[in-house]
Amino acid sequence: MKAELELTTSFRSSFTGKMVRVVRQIRARSRVLELERSAGDSVFLVTPTAEHGSKQIVVSLTTYGPRLYDVHLVLESIAQQTMKPNRVILWLDEAEYQERDVPIVLQHQMERGLEVRFCHNLRSYKKLIPTLKICPDATIITIDDDILYPKDMLEQLVTESQRFPNTVIAHRARRIGFNEARLAPYREWEYVSSEERPSSLTLPIGIGGVLYPPGIFHHDVFVESKFMSLASNADDIWFKAMSLLCGVKCKKTNDARTFYSRFFEIPGSQLNALHHTNLLGQENDVQIASVFGRYQLYDLLWYEAQSESASIDCHVNRK
Image (cartoon, rainbow, N blue to C red; front, side, top):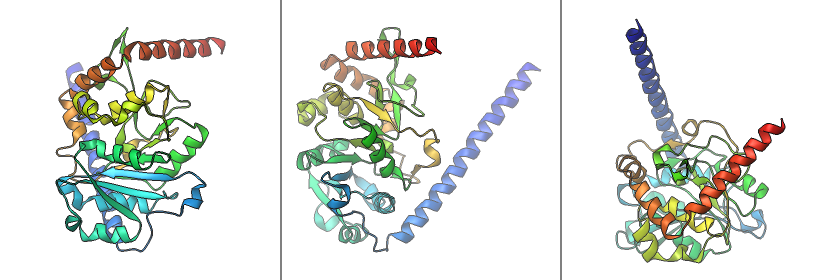
């Protein structure tokens, strides 16, 4: 009887999971069709600088390979935002592409405010490092090239940044975890569903969009020889370390809605995704050890974990 009950429960769980994935795929394809239709519109991707006062808000991303022919969908989801940025910059590998390789649909988006620029191959780091160099005083929001973003994505990030200045804000984040005094494996770091205040233990995940205020990084952030040798496939880890060295905390948006009910993957785009390689191959653990060890961040993070735990205990005891 117990075995039958466990089998029934397992079947129901498996069936529910499959149904959720099917519904998600249907909604993603519907969103793709909507964005394809809007690609011919004349709506601008950007807004005049004056709309955000003296501070520029720059959206930055990169793409490669076949994704170049789908990235216009991501950009259309930015064009539909309730709050638009001042600039949108798409970085391409100068060894892979030339101006003549830019698809027609992206050329039309360039007429609507998109900037397509070329740099040498920094892999996933292309979405932030080159923009940091040319826009040092801007608020930079990085996005991925395979996600269709909800219309309030930028506005949520900017609104929370106004409440928590000099804080990295993200729609997707994990909490750096420990097993006693040792760093837990990356796969055991829990996703943060919602967060009331910034934390040194919050790790922003690039997939959902990440807001970086100006002037928050350690100067090593630009040293290519270091980030390519220590974390060539883990830019999230590198940027976390570089901000942590300057005492900058991070925060997940205070929004408990299920991430994948609002953020849709472009169908077929995840077949060779970097995050699958890192997670399934445990490459993140190796790169975390390299970066955190090189910059001696273990003790700092453990101290923060202990401090936050004591603060929570104190808060509970006072109730």
